[in-house]
Amino acid sequence: MYTIVRRQAFSEITFLWEVLAPDVAQAAQPGQFVMLRLHEGGERIPLTVADFDRRAGTVTLVIQAFGKTTREMAHHYREGDRFADFVGPLGRPQRIEKVGHVALVGGGLGIAPIYPQLRAFKEAGNRTTGIVGFRAKPLVFWEDRFRDYCDELMVCTDDGSHGRPGFVTEALRELLERDPPDLVVAIGPPPMMQACVETTRPFGVKTLVSLNSIMVDGTGMCGSCRVSVNGQVRFACVDGPDFDGHQVDFQELMARQKRFKSQEATASEGYAH
Ligand code: FES
Image (cartoon, rainbow, N blue to C red; front, side):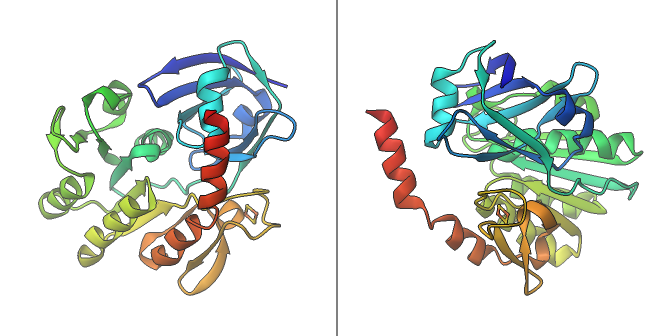
């Protein structure tokens, strides 16, 4: 069993868990993920590591309560509670190198996982620009943590209630024209990552994306997380989750993301009643 040593709510749907898991914390690297299961018979869900503290032996996750399991996590689990399984770290770590100027773009679910990558790129001696996008001011979190590792930080809100109005792609385009980065890392929902990739493509700036395809075992055996990269079949759980975004087939990824839609809706409705 694993214990939730800290829980923090960022908004009605976004919350943080700090989980005591010394072995995972010891081995975790930016870009990796864990598979979590709340209880016997529960669904296994992949969550990207948002932070880790090797001394305290904790792993931080930032979760948005959209599906059945994440809503169960939000409503039924409190600080001090325990849950069944926490497997990881899984996936390949991000390659952190000194490349010069790195822009890290996070949207929605991708904002937390971009943080350890930002910190690692900064600590490797890069100049860093952070671009993070939220729907509205009440959903903004970790602005201070991002600022600590950014030479420049652009906080965007869709409705203009905080920071810069508009989408992260608009801020990214402005940066590409004004101060082009040597590398872009974009993490968020697939349409947002695709939009970032199409924004950087004409500028020829390498853009890494973290693919959150549907995972079942997380170990390369089931094929559920199959994606096409540069025309080749790759498994996000063992070959990724980070890939060169300019080579990813996003249409296929988004079509495959919908294949359990009706089962997800049924599970969600069943949970709500
Ligand atoms: Fe099964 Fe990747 S989750 S192969």
